[in-house]
Image (tube, rainbow, N blue to C red; front, top):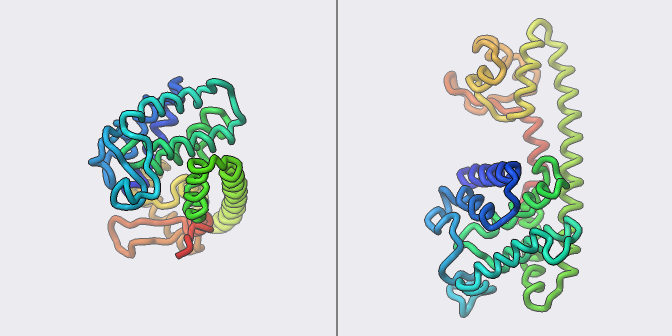
Amino acid sequence: MREVSNYVAALDCGLKLLATGLPLSLRLIRNVHSVLMKSGRGSDQEPGEFRRSQNWIGGTRPGNAAFVPPPAEEVLECMGKLELFLHDVPSPLPVLMKAALAHAQFETIHPFLDGNGRLGRLLITLILCEQNVLREPMLYLSLYFKTHRQEYYALLNNTRLVGDWESWLNFFADAVTTTASQAVAAARQILDLSEQDRAKINGIGRGAPSALKIHQSFMEYPIATPSFLTKKTGLAPATVNKALGCLERVGIVRELTAQKRDRVFSYSGYLEIMEQGTELPE
């Protein structure tokens, strides 16, 4: 949970820096990394600082590793060249190709002691948002990469060993197509669910206006407490609790805690849609 929270905070940090006019740069990448690694796994591995020692992927030492990135003394030069590429030097490329190549190069450089995979995936979203391909960060390729992890690692390695960039670009394009299609399908399902549930709420009688306000908040925050909903909607606590009771009776929300105090409710149908396809193979 801490890592997910840090991931969201790091993405938000990157988007805010882009909004201030700061381009995708080494400064922005270091700032995002410092937020990503502020706590939890890897927080003791110099967050926000390029590595000053050798790292490796797989194995117990560089001698038996699956891949050994460039020496520490070459990291800054490599990252400087990646920064130029992000700034379209020597020439611009189609955005998706640019994102695919930048991700592969970032993972090859592996500039930090830890968190390179997470930040490399964040970099894809930041590129697409900076280039105005996405208005909001609604395309996450992490699940696709993890579902196809063996192919993902093999194709990245082949760009390094034999220069097979075409296979990597085809894989990346498939990842974008599949993930975007799933996102569109989920959005349509959520809109359909919302319309169906609003129709249910309109049929409950006098409490419908308050319940509709609560439902709208659940569309933004599908897991919430009564106190949060009180602040969010401006309704009185008693009104919020009564509305939650109505929503629970018609099967729209479900209490997760089964207690009288500090209760937590979920918009179960919404969460079921969001969780579709997230079950990873053993």
